[in-house]
Length: 137
Length: 243
Image 1 (cartoon, helix red, strand yellow):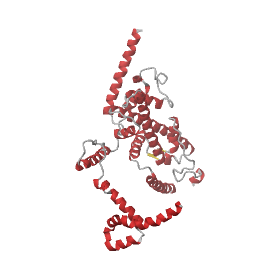
Image 2 (cartoon, rainbow over the protein chains, first blue to last red):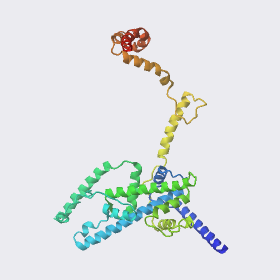
Image 3 (cartoon, rainbow over the protein chains, first blue to last red):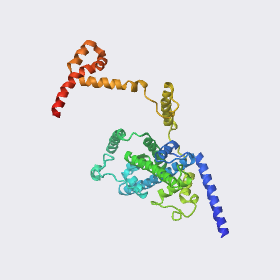
Image 4 (tube, rainbow over the protein chains, first blue to last red):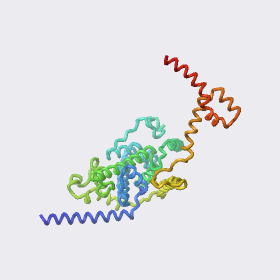
């Protein structure tokens, strides 16, 4: 029993040092979301902490969230494009650019629990809503 | 060839649409900064371009995420009677943000085991290790708002000093208005009222023509004498009503 306790306290100690090291490494890391911006949002919601490392942690967590959503959307985009290429070779050139679209984003966000709904007639591009057959002409 | 021309014209249309929408977007400074950061992240993930609506949606979600994390963390700190949040509040908040949706390693035992060893932190540290640093496009002036408010504070503080600060009034209270504004006010109001009451009577018009700009003061002085006529008229009405 005492042995177990000792083990867990050792483990806790290891976690503690790992966390301290991680937080210390955040001091050298520059997140894409600047500290000032994060501080603004934190202050807006009543979060008060003078420690810069916590601000950085929030920034990194948010960056991770956005990056995950973006990579999901990218996968959606690539999958859609490969399906299109199978259908028609000619359109490969045109559709090869990787563009973040509402369609892919809403699919990616749904995986993170956000339901994005926009009107069906929402015209993002001039060709939206036009029949694909008539678009080809 | 036709297709190329078509795409060019479409691009022009895209641009014009983008410009139109740019005017309509919320002009909040923080939102625009977040949009820059989000687009940088999207670009680092491999996107070449983005629809404006999609980018704005993602920016909105990002700002909501930030606010939600902060709100959860501060509520955790308030639950334990603290005003300042610490790392444990933040970890709890991050756990709450990710657990109901995707789940993470050790989500089932998150409240049993030590918070410091939770999966969310490990995932974040892994993310930090494996992603390159992409600094924000442009440095932001840090204390812009703070200096603004400080200068405003100084301005308000300097006023009572010049007027002579009384010892029993705390320094942080806003300055008193000019002494002239509240000392002469009664007189002004009185004059205005009388002027308003008498503005259509023949007496005022006569006096205006006689004395020009000094009319108001004369009105105030002669009021007691001239009121007799008016009160008599109203008095008759009141007497009739009373009868």
